[in-house]
Length: 292
Length: 235
Image (tube, rainbow over all chains, first blue to last red; front, side, top):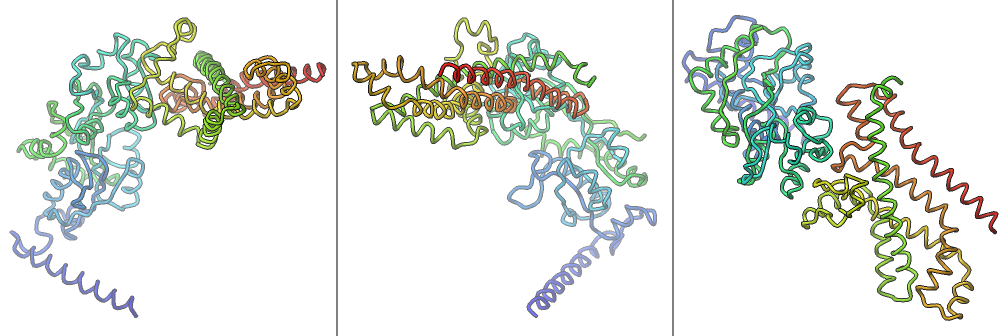
């Protein structure tokens, strides 16, 4: 009996909320849900009709998608998702966030648990076989983290002298990338299972630098305020895209148009500076949308 | 098996590094273990307490934790284990002398952990020496140190050699952990990276790693068997 009462209460609350939502919409430009003209039957029309979009993002990546005390994820990826929602005439508070760590990103799209994934998601051919990517909306790259007072290291070339020590994660792509710049691997390279250990080694002075994607490094700059900085420019290219269901070309083109508009009208740079750009002060390169 | 033959140089250099690590750690463990065993049987109560607590601590915490404290605790205390940069020895074992301290940290972790087991193996050997031997030595006026040096330890070694061998073999296998705490290029870790980075097939590489460890442990086991047989003849 108790259960039924709770169900009734929640039901009433849900009704009240949806009524309120409708009321809010009436104040909008065209009136009612489904306010804009999207081709009937398209994903855009469906989402606009439902006035809800499900977004997969990271909850633990400072600067890109970090769920803090506010209870809502914040960061560059989240802002990009908001741009898409805005273009669909869906208000910010109707975005439903799902945590998508790296390993589940393809799955959640294939299983239709989310509509889009914006989660530091590198575009590559293997992933393109199972999902489609809009974008890229950002070009990440491997970079080098050093202590604030370090001026010896200016880029990967600095390691060729065979004395400076660098840390990365075991069996990772950044680790094999930096290897080719090292003069003597045995004397210069340290590998751990997680980046936090590298950060500890950097703090303790056992290594001079930590290397991996600039995005991850910026996260550590943000959590260790004032202690670290990025040395030089990124020296690899990792294009980040927005993951969506394979074959939904209309939706992909729509997101691409939205991104291009944001690149041009300055919104893109603005949201970057408000989020990840606070920690990564290197020059922001506007990517070219891949329409293939 | 071509995966192993193609990457034979990786296995050889990994084997060599693991062998160096094991040799140095075995020496360290035997030194630490002997000192602690002497502490545990010494007539001075505070020394006995030190020996007992050492064994209690290091025998009862996981090796991973010991490694963790060595690799991240020592730097926090401001030590890079530079006392292990022993002149001369660092010419033979080049990793000892380099700036990166993780090889030295691994030796410390393995020595301290294995030392506790060495201590107990030695003590069991010492207990196997008939009490009359030590009493007789004391009766002819030998000091505690002379007693150990000339009477007890030479006999204790013989009784302890087989359990000591097992302890050292266990240590050789434990040394695979070093790769997870900053030592680059040891046998098991360079094997793993062949699989994950170069995409070599898993099973042949794992067999290759196992063979590398067997080359170190099996001869040691055979040697121990022979020592044991010789001891039996000597009796």
